[in-house]
Image 1 (spheres, one colour):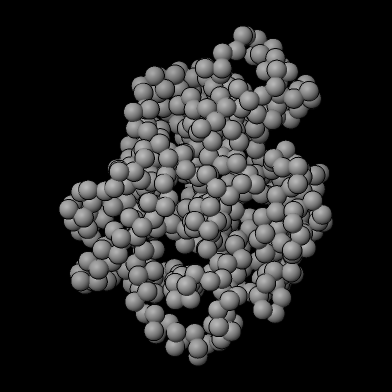
Image 2: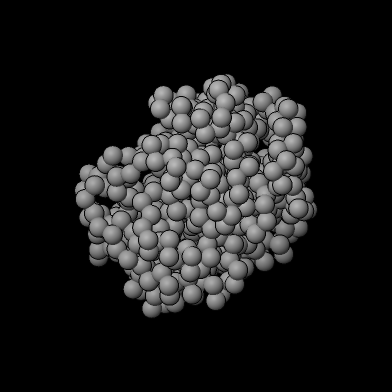
Length: 502
């Protein structure tokens, strides 16, 4: 991030695939080749952690901060590894090619993974050494996660606070007995994480060989109904039965007049500090084993967070609570010198957040869609106010696409943008005007959304904050890839000094 460059934001699930959802298979490797031809430096993705229909299939709402999403495992790679036969994947259902139908994908993928596990058990000897080494190296989080998932299934998907008290409270004897009864389910969970890790590391190696840096997301909060909270209750503000006493959110802002009530449990920062932030350091270490650069979602929560009393209907009434952030980042940078972090500093950003970012030299984010209001001359998101040490987006996964944003903007915003660029704007080509504006910025790193390169309108929007359905579904239709995109990007990357190696 010290040199000029660019990348593309496209989550794994958005890639083409015959199996209803993008995965770590051949299309992911073709996407790496596409990035290389476009002269990109980076591939940014969303969190790789498990998703769940109960949480709207959001990658930011997971049962684990460490585990991998089984839906991203490639059936074709399982065939290559001898864990499935070609016949097993020869006739997938007729999935839509422009969005993920999670209700159809989940049972189909689970069926294939169960078949693969059965073959793994039958041919265990050839995998034993690699599998055992993986389980041993990841035991700190893996055993808690597979136990959590096995218990969720055993107790009919109830929240862990509704489990029998001895299991809810992790009483050693009772938990040991239940684990013995669920041994097969535990082993299946280990197998899924083993295969996920194996396929992801092969993909990451392919990126490295092509000079593509992977940018991954760390969500600030974790789910209450997660392995993390169940196994580390002392790190969260919970009552005796395990329910949150206060929950997370953000106050009213650009995205929502009532704020966003996320409902996640709040960290017990006193305990974390006393333990020298060990859980967080382990989380950073794990993510650095997956990615080259980390985008820290809701970064301001590491300085101060919006705390709402449990049970309130929205996030309007709450209070800012400070975090021991200097001690935290001192510990982080002691453990990980030159930690490659992008601070997601959008929303209500106060001087204390800016001070911490400056103190620890953390680049923030700029979003062009926020630039063209009535404050344009002084607006920090406007290109003439950008700084080198930042990462620039036209929009993120929480925004409309470039074309959708322009079409839905008021006439004053459109007029300001047209006068700023100095030309008449065509809504059918506006995305390329904004792409050019982004790549010409002084910002060291520009990240473009794949939807904008394809000229998608609002139908390409990945997520609408504050809603729980219809999100995280967008996919690339394979015919949408055209050489013109590569040619235009190659020209702009050269013109604005962002070519690799410069």
